[in-house]
Every structure is written in C-alpha cells, then in structure tokens.
Figure 1: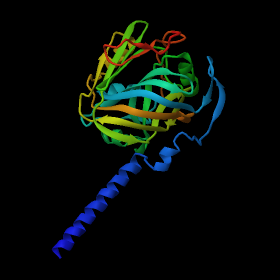
Figure 2: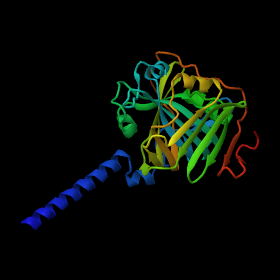
Figure 3: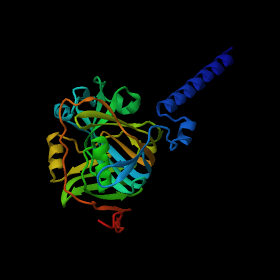
Figure 4: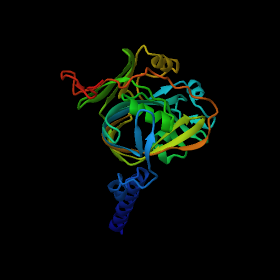
Length: 322
C-alpha cells in the first residue's frame, strides 16, 4: 500500500508537470503547427500603397534581425500625460512607477530592405488599468495589453514614410551604431551628431521560445490605431535588475526622457537569438482624446547604419549610400 501510494504521488506530480508545461506552451503560443506555418500569412493583404517615397505591400515581412530591449521605470503621472487616450493606462511596477520599453532592431532582411529602428514605447493597457507587473509577464495574453509608440526613429526614408502614412507611427530618420558580441548587444542612437541614447543589454537569462504577437498603439489622423504584429522569437529573458543600461545624450528626445525621471538600469530585458515578424495593417479603435505631436526630425534620405562585432573590429557600413 505504501509503495502504491508513492507511485500515485509520483504519477500526480508527473501529470501536474505535464499540465504546467502544456499550459506554458499554450500561453506562449507554441503549437508546433503554428510555428511551422508562421510565415504563411492568411490575413488581409494590400499592394502598391503609395507612402510618398515608395510603394509598399502589406504585410511587411521581417525575416532576420538583431534585436534586444530593456524595460525601465519612470514617473507614473508624467507617463500618463503622454498617453493620447483616456482609455490607455500605464502598466506599473510593484513600486507604482510606470514602465517604459526601449527596443532596438537591426533589420538585416525585410521585404522593404534593411534598416535600423529604435522604439521608445509606453507600456499600457487599453480599456482598464491592470495589476502591477502581471501584463509584462503575460504580454498579449493579458486583455488590452500593448505599447504606445512615443518615438520610433529609423534609418531609411521608406521605413519612415510607411510607418507614418499607414500607422501614424512617430518615425524620423536617425543614425544608429549597433554592436553585437557573445556577451551583450548595444545601440548608439543619434541625429545630426547629437546623441539621443545608448542602450546596452546583456545576453543573459532564461531561453524562451515565444509566439505571442506584439501589439502597438499609435495615432493616425486623430484616431487611435491598434496594430497586432505576429512574432516568433527565441530570446534570453532577463529578470535580474540591471542587465540593461541606458545612457541619455543631449538631444531633445533625451531631455524629454530625463523629464520622465527615467531609470538608467532595467527591471527586465530581452535579447533575441532569432526573430521573425509580420507587420499587417492596423485597425482604428476610437478617437484619440489628445493629439500626439511626434518629433519631426531632419529631412534626410537615409541615416547612418553601422554594426561591429566587438570593440576591436572595424564597423561595417550597412547603408553605404548614406
């Protein structure tokens, strides 16, 4: 009887472990058939959209990139004042401070060509406020989760114009210097010789396979736009404070971030080992309560985009025509 009881206990633990694993797989969207069919887009398509500097087909495909992000804390009320809708609520850390994400993408192969991008986003929920921290863990599995795009500098005009015209993203042309080593990833962001920020993220943490979409909010012609971006990635998830660090420069955007009392050490990080994404059209979900006046940037055909693999290596110029 005692042996039978132990066997039953072990069987129960095994069943619980299996159920936990399957639950996590479902939470992260890791059905095998979904991963195998990831790039077989079955949603709406649009062709030959005139964005001014080019014609663009939707969805836009992102096949290969070097990407990483850090989540930092900022003053709650200052962040709330930047959100364009009363239906958007800042996601909070347990200490009551708002959470801001800064993400860097060196897009090496996309359907609109290679370019660099740095996103400065306000993590938020639509419809009602959320408990502290939980939305960060669940991401798009949490109702209303998303990120309002405060600034989204890029290195090519077509990427700028497509983002502005189709989504209302706050894009401008800037310069980006990426560095990738086995230990960390880094981006130095600037415009016209003025330093905006430098983000460094250590390649450390749990290895996570994830098929949850990225959801963004933006304002286009006075309407609040929600865009659901399918993503499949494998990344290091760092939940140890300080795995990401931020240095702010002398640019007006850097000054705005200082006024938010933005922290310089991260509370969480992601450093991607591989990543695929599909960018379809967004949807209008209501009128914005306040206008969002994005930073216009300089009128340039292309920004500087370089990458180096360690400080001793010479930088590679990914936009030679710039």
